[in-house]
Length: 270
Image (cartoon, rainbow, N blue to C red; front, side, top):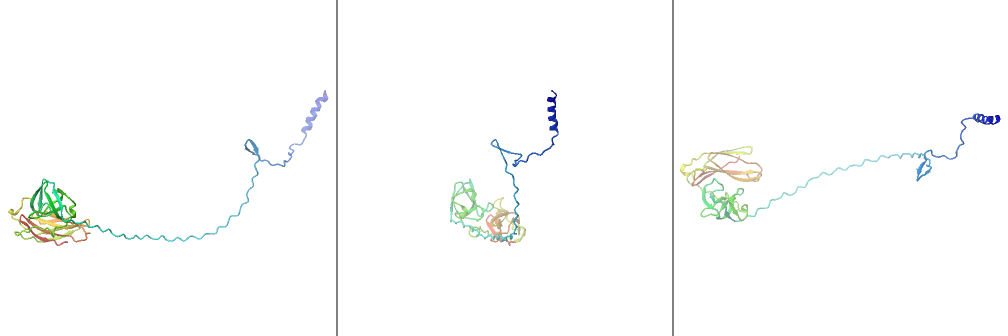
């Protein structure tokens, strides 16, 4: 009974005397401590070898390319468009659309009155001024001027020949002398003209609305020569005349009375 007790005790004492920390037997296989998993089975990961660094290739400096200058663009002058000449016709047919239309001796509402034309009257137009809406009408015994705004015209009246002032003439009065231009001055684009007075007798007025003088000017505006007739009861007018026209501006002063016109007095253009 005592022998059975001491035998286990003796075995325990011998085990306690064994040396601690004996090194484990070295394994000839290296395994990765973190196995990868593929398809449910573990596979060993091959050891990673650090690549041997390759020497950097030496850089040969390249030559800077020569930049050719960009050729400058020289615009080629395109030929200027020459406006096509408007074909001229000898005459046009027209019909009066106003109830009563005045036909006058000159191309404007302030020239002397010749005859009245009723609505529906048929006319033959034979000329115009070149820049206004007044047209010259063949009328017996004297041709006269009407405003094209009150006509129905078969065609374009601007295709008619320009007849004023070289062909269509104002009637000259034998009863009054022409005036004389005193001055023509310019301030910028404004021209001012003055002339000597000519007194008209009260009995020689066509009506109470008649003007004593009519100043006709061919002036430049917007690169074009425009015709204007300026009525006045005083010996002074001003108007605009710009530079830039191919032909020179010009003008003249008429004295007006019921028998006709005295003059003209040419304006010495400033």
